[in-house]
Length: 257
Image (cartoon, rainbow, N blue to C red):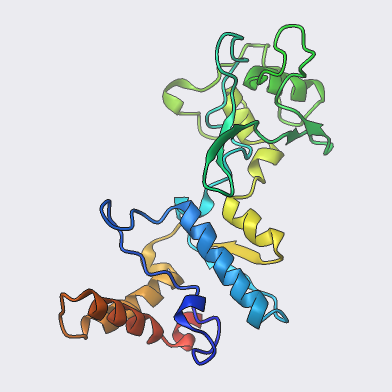
């Protein structure tokens, strides 16, 4: 991606990241690294191209679709409130200093738009401040006449279908499946999309399709062909310069096609 004419941008201002993958090198490119890279890209765009509307295009990689640690997710939440002698259900997030901490899951929303807390109030007689669990969360939604939400006690639904395999086409077979299909869970944005939209940037995720149909992979393929034309070398400086030259050789018209 060329965010600014090269004569005006130094390498330190570029949104490109040169990453030496491997356990004993730079590790692996995580969602945290992606968020940092996109933040840098938005800073550059705000500085040089603030008069334009910008759209980021990402493929459908798991790293790109990862949610915040305390975002709505039906994957790991328990069926019932944790016993008082056991740890409460909390989510792990990373703060600005890179330290992990445990925080409550975000509130959900009933179909009418009002908030639904997933934790009992601290004044609750049995579970003060404890996570409600899927059984109680679904029961509250049933009582609010949420569309598509059956009574979880008639018959009593399991937390998850056997072997995590829900019947095709069913949305009410288990508690987890019910929540998975609720509007507030469906529309939960990824951490990447939340970061971009909060600063006024649009995000498009490509569908899951074969890499040969992926426009981003076409650009990678073009640069790889150029890279193979350089003389072989074992010097890291040569390899780095060849990578940069190969990426910059991809014509903008080819990217747009």
